[in-house]
Image 1: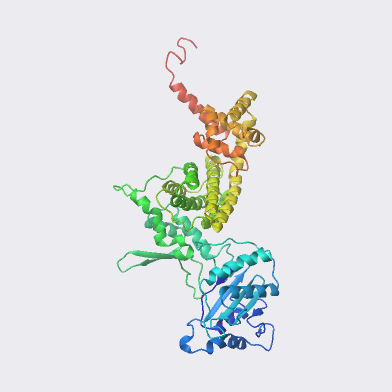
Image 2: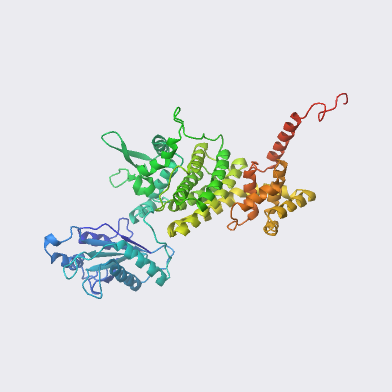
Length: 572
């Protein structure tokens, strides 16, 4: 249940015309009263003899009874109360009780003292009501509306429990502004999946992901096709910006612009600048080039992303709160950049994960920027590397990166839960579920190839890797051996050994450094951790493996000492 106090107004009759009218997009059906201050107000929706003017005059009567100097400049109070799409449809009687409890909680009405303001609750849709009140009490005094928004929110949480509705988490004022009903209806009419505000927020977040200067940021906005207007001071200093979709226009056919701060609190120009302020300090002063260089390929960017995410998990789990908050915000940039450059079969899930995690990237813990440089550099490399292919090394390193990011997002969820950030924890949980789906799509092919390679290993090699497993992780060995992914892990252990590493040492380290309780397949997780740590190719096809083996053989042959291990002279 979402109660929202709207801006106060000056014309009661204007609001009533809207509530009883057809709506801006013919969305209002059967407007009628469900409750009022005296249980007997006229209802222009169901009573043919009642008029809007009669209802307006009754509502405004206490206001008219006081001197003009004592009247509020804006005397119309307006509250909307909306249920979720998955909630059951409530009866008029239930909505009427909700209205009475909401106005009592807000301070509009006080049934016990019989000295409240006049109000009426109008229902013109299945899922919500509107409450209109006038802000002079029957005794001529003004109501105490301090903290009315917090009080109606608390009442909403109690009503959700009593009525069996979806339980929403308590907010902390750091959420992005929700689209209005008018924006939602406009998106539906235009066939948009999301409102213009949501599309703009997603596009701006992608533009800022890994950006290191205002020039780069605004160039990305323009490249994404947005209309951009900058607010410049007389001195020439840039003060702010606003953006619009070219095809989102108002009734005068003008683009509808949104300032960055209205898209999300962390997208105002000063907050965006904070992201690259630390990077500027680390630029090469002779070339003004940012630290780090763009990778040669999408797979290189994804491998570095996996490494950065792996390191960030420890910081989020055990670091200082301000530093952890910076890493969490940077993780959002990585998700934005990864979703923007993903292959078709993972694009939807990664986009949804980034969209959900946006709420988890902000809290009242102020991020100490600069420590998050590795993650921001990973986001930059992803953005500059271009789209990844769905197969080969690109596809496999995508699975590797998603796997590491899943554990980073899970650590973020636990961090927010410990801080009591209910909405952020729920958003991180939702993002983790979307990442799990994206991982399954990305990992299916490379793990399938590894599985087949593992099944083709000879019995002595399988027994050897089984012994390695029992030695390195005895407490997990039986669980892993029972998983289908064991064969992929066995092939990886064989690759680790062939590359000259000690498989037992690397396996023990991979299993011990991070929790595995949230993994659906422990063997899958260990595969990616081993391949990243050992520097093995993520693309596990026989062609790649055989090619690497040939390179190693040629390299070793080139290092042989003539006369000792080289071909013998004088023989065919």
